Length: 190
Image 1 (cartoon, rainbow, N blue to C red):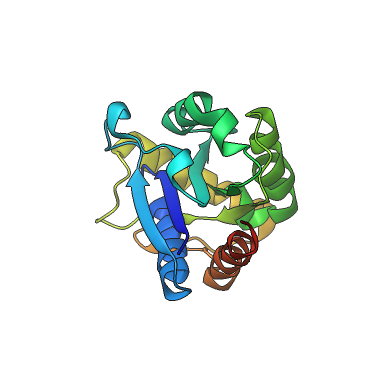
Image 2 (cartoon, helix red, strand yellow; image 1 turned 120 degrees about the vertical axis):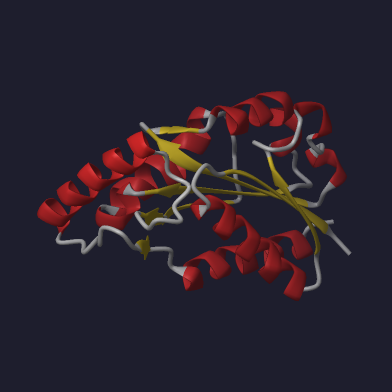
């Protein structure tokens, strides 16, 4: 049975939710899965991609970039991640994908992996969740920034984002489809 590593960085929980859902789908398809939060796991404890038949990397996008911990993981393991026997999937979660999904796919789903020197078998950009509720992990500054961004999305794209609520724009069907696609690819490799 092939093993998958799902390694991610998430500051607000949106990317974490995607990573965990993908792992759940892979487990239901018969794969063993390790889910690793690169932010809370010490670098010396980061698993090697060489121990897996498949790896899925995920990060939120902030200011057009992936989180630095994911970039460090890629720098440490680029050769293994691009190995011919490994199935590699990459996803980004971005507020841009809420109002401009084509731009998000082009810049974050395809562009960021290429910039990082990765050759993934499949990559996507997903809309995230904008949590403006009282339980939000967003700090005061980020919550204010997200409220301003939400207002811009309302004006420019007609996106309804409600203050004081969890606004979840993740398309779980698309997320699960990517997990199944990567599982099928991994099953077809030696």
